[in-house]
Image 1 (cartoon, rainbow, N blue to C red):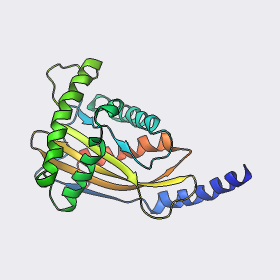
Image 2: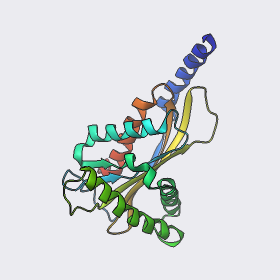
Image 3: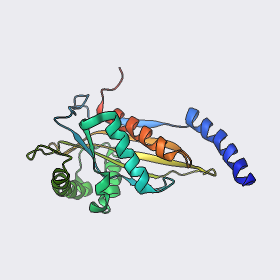
Length: 217
């Protein structure tokens, strides 16, 4: 117990330093897209079920905490599909990986080898939207999402400290009508094992805000 307390104290110091100096993010936006995105209670965006690789704790609990945090911040403007994670299979992370690859190649559309994942997303969105309507999360029986927020969290490279995990969150907003990535983010996060249920919702809300709002002048 004494050793764990000592390690926790040491990790807390590193965790504080990491939060103050090591967190970084990169955001890219489609030059032809107007911001902020038209996301509101009448035209909500969907948060596609998120894979949480490398995140400490019970990922189901963390995922639901992220959902609750999004509802608390955005109300009906953003709908989380995290409770439907089991329905999407590997697409929860392969989609984010392919969006990342496209953006790294300076492409904001899902073409070439990425095209099949965009097609899979379109098909999956029909299923998810139908399920959300049946659950009452979407009241308008004729509503179809325009924007879907696709995020993936993966373990970061480098030294890991006891009781602290470094991960990278990446992904973006995909326009289902234009078939384009309209905004993309990559952000390094340092998570405390003891505070992850409070920290992850806050971190993900910040990421969503950066993706949908107008960039600072």
